[in-house]
Amino acid sequence: MATQDNFYSKTSFYLSLGFWVPLFNIGFAIVSLWFGLKALRLAEKNPKKYQKRKYAVIGIALSLTTLVLSIFGIFLFGF
Image 1 (tube, rainbow, N blue to C red):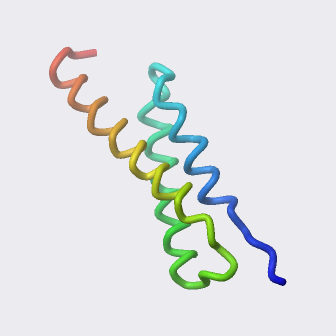
Image 2 (image 1 turned 180 degrees about the vertical axis):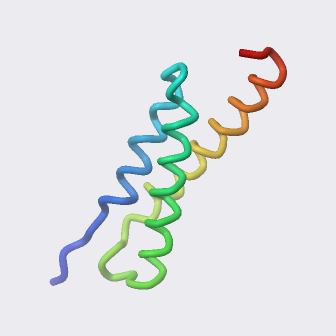
Image 3 (image 1 turned 90 degrees about the vertical axis):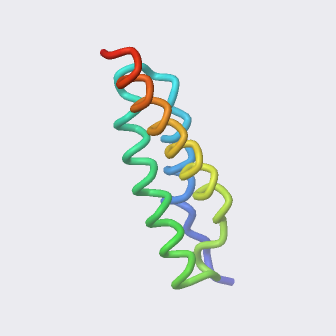
């Protein structure tokens, strides 16, 4: 039985939970988005080794939401 490597997908998910940290949320979202996209690419190439895609998808969704709302808030209210 092959071991599953879920590092990228779980890292994406956990970093995306940093959306509530002021001043760092945009950085967390960008890094989380990168990890999530990398996890999905790896899962597409080798699905038996990388199976936990839902963590990556949730991480990407939260990251994109954080980026959109943060950028909208910056333009609307300023710094």
